[in-house]
Length: 636
Image 1 (cartoon, helix red, strand yellow):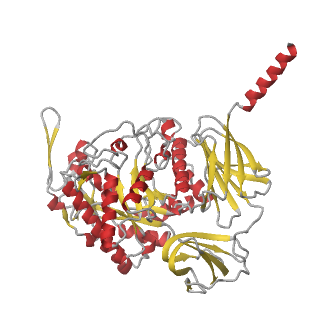
Image 2: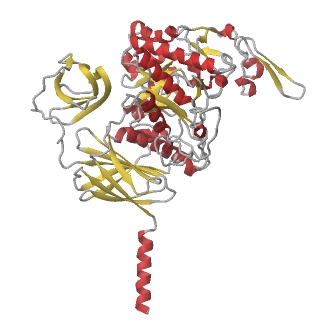
Image 3: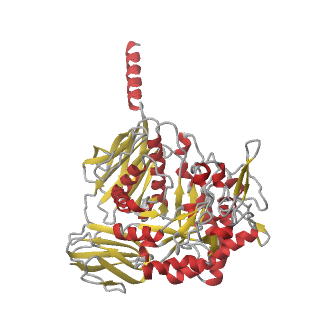
């Protein structure tokens, strides 16, 4: 009996030792889930925060690996007058203030020509005209925030304080501070930039179709005090006219819309759901239906990116760390599902409490398939995102929520992901992903995806594979990983880890001065085991035993094709022109090592090769139909 007790005690001790922290199993298959990861996942609203500091702002962005900046100022884009370089601030009396997109674009072009800039077209029909009728906020209360800031006091509006302490307001006259603005005026900024400023429009491909126009009844109620079907029709007609003009002026343009504001208004705009041809629709279905009808009627492509804003209302940490599942996860029961409960209501504002899954991009794709037809070329993006602040460990919670959205975006082919607020932890996160993740997504399945995800990617040369483990759990997690179809060289590999970020200061200063902590992990026979700290993310970059197996050989015969390269030899740029749409271009040196990969999605593109040393290079061109070819060029 004593022996049995000792034996049981030993078993219990071993059991407790093995499971003192949770065990997770991850399986990675390098031949599955392969799709290009858009470089524009690594993006920021207002990377140029202040035009006087543009150079230093962009230097920091480049150090962190930012590849796109949205510079259109959100709601302030709606009344932007690019000719006079002014706009209205709808959250500050509608007062008119200076705003210079020309200067922003020129600074981007001068200091960061590889960073893509996003701006917006105005669809409302009126823009700012003068600041002569601004509400005198400094004289009123020293420019302090109060309830009147959101009122329409520009243009001669008045405010009266009542005897009970409340306020009464009279709206200003919009004709005093705005002017008519036809759609060709919005799009003429393209000609101005190309002809007058000599800018390459390919650095400014992405254009928001205004901003959150389904809620103009609240954000721009000076112009649209009543929003109804007539106003929705006006919005859509202005949208269609703008797209048609823009595509003629700039065929490579990326049209993004409807830039919808929030989970509620994805379905229910501020004026109520639109009725069209006797049927009432939720907002996104209505928008997609109208675009499909117009495109079929006129033959002009109406949408490239379904663009949404997302401000999750979750205030519980555990829920915040699952908000990345709102986009594609058909099994995730989102606790704050709200507007989506009206998605199946055929008339009016019917409510269905049985709808608990959000999966908004899945729903949009279903509408795309229904109205455009399956196979329609469209992608998805988030151009504003912000989670609620939490009381404890805010920087790591922010970082993990952001990392999870980047990882899911890579898995599902998201075109861009652009946070609106920029908090502690975000510079560190985007740097970890943009600097260490590769260009092609790889399938990774976790036994506990809620708590631990392994976002995995490989390079086009198939000689390097990166795994970024995101641990959302409140405790350490033991993760055992098996890698298939990628023969890892047995060795110790460096890990790069973010954990315990401080809540009260910025830790990211540069690529070499940041909060990343390095360690090592051993890989044997394509297996590795590591312990992940609570609330952490950890990257490991692995090497393939068979280096360069997929790289074009230095002696490989350069194929004949319809694709031309010029100039050749070149100095700082090379232009590729093909008879079919180019998906990507990968540039290799003569030893077969990949130097750069460019996401193109166009018939013609110019790539920057100024960073390459003089010599002979091979370009592997992958087309949209998945065919490829090899071209050679010389860099002087």
